[in-house]
Image (cartoon, rainbow, N blue to C red; front, side):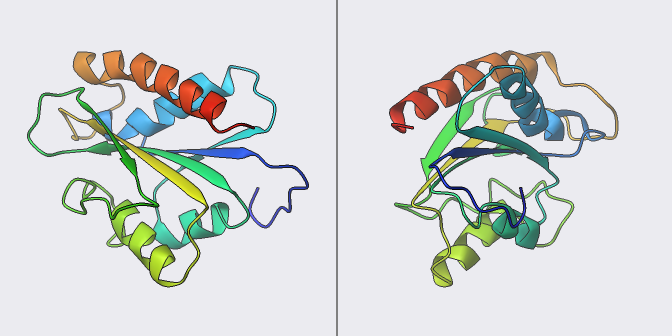
Length: 160
């Protein structure tokens, strides 16, 4: 995908997370669910969330949907949705990155450099456990299916 030029419009979905930090992997789980479904003009990628890599990944995309874990103290499994093209996303929610430069900082850098996709939707799923280990908490695992459904609706609404 990186550096690939697309002739037709497409929706680019990026699931973010670390597979070995429990609920931090929720974006990867949503991406894996979406990969199992056949969608024309949809490309699904799993990423660690490293900022510059994200910007390079979405470079040629018109519509991007990011899914990542968040932690705000809300009920685990709570789903947040942001239209990042219209407004900055709260950087204090997306701080469970192993990188100093996370999703929120990446979006703001891309905004400053005029490199945001035309449409950028960000889903945040409230995590419960970010300790070392594989597997999601029960609450976050339940949110995976709901976010998958919502992303499918976003794909239909994209007009692609």
